[in-house]
Image 1 (cartoon, rainbow, N blue to C red):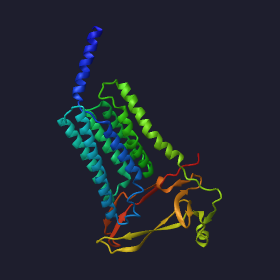
Image 2 (image 1 turned 180 degrees about the vertical axis):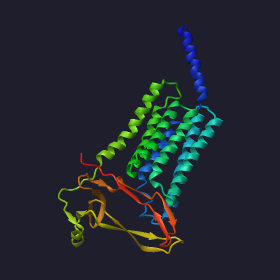
Image 3 (image 1 turned 60 degrees about the vertical axis):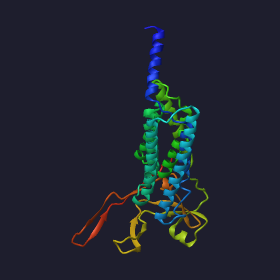
Image 4 (image 1 turned 135 degrees about the horizontal axis):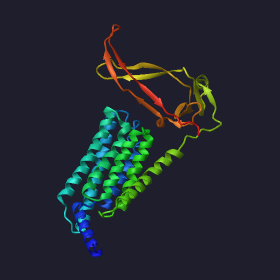
Length: 346
């Protein structure tokens, strides 16, 4: 086959591929959604907190209003800018583009309602991963009718969200990974778009892996180098000494076998409200915690391990609850699993 014939066949193939993938996602869309979602994720621990809204119902409604208002503004701005860009190119809105846009808005609405539901049904530790999966799914669906690169990157974003849960990252790590994936990843993706050109598998794989490294290295390095620094001059005292003379900064040592009462506030219409219910738990291993001005800072460690933050290591779950009526009388049985995974000295 002559070189001219090969070129003609290649041109026909490219034309057919472009006909199948006739949508175009605007660069500003990825910029807007990436920066807004990444910014909200990073700011989530500083706005509408439990200190500002102690009542969980009020906090849930506040977050619902904030997310609905923010994402509605981004959607309207994106739609306006996209319409202006299409008008400048003398393009019309295709039926498929409108349907894909509806899918995007639907998945964003699911994220808002899912966030609202976690305040009442639990599972808040999964919310960052859920948002990453939803946006990855949105990009993947768009890529099916648009650019091949969106398809690849959407699949990688979904994989990142699933990996967050599979590797049981702590809440802080998932926050950083989600913020980087969306806040850095989507703007970078907008720069990488090649308007639907057909590329070799190896090139697409190289682009996707490069994108993946770009969004994962910053949060992983941040987790690596942000460590708890404990002054070597900070005294270590027993609980009794601490109660006698609480200093501005000190380390309190809790020996194995210490009883830690867990106070449970009971409310609702099934049991009589009680703020004095106590579940006595016994430490299985010694632990040291940092106190400043009489309050724990969240930094602690086990003997022979590095200092770490509270939110980075704990994992508590109640896998089952059931009622029974044994000979001793009615009772409720449950299982409480509390695990910590400290980092050993390196």
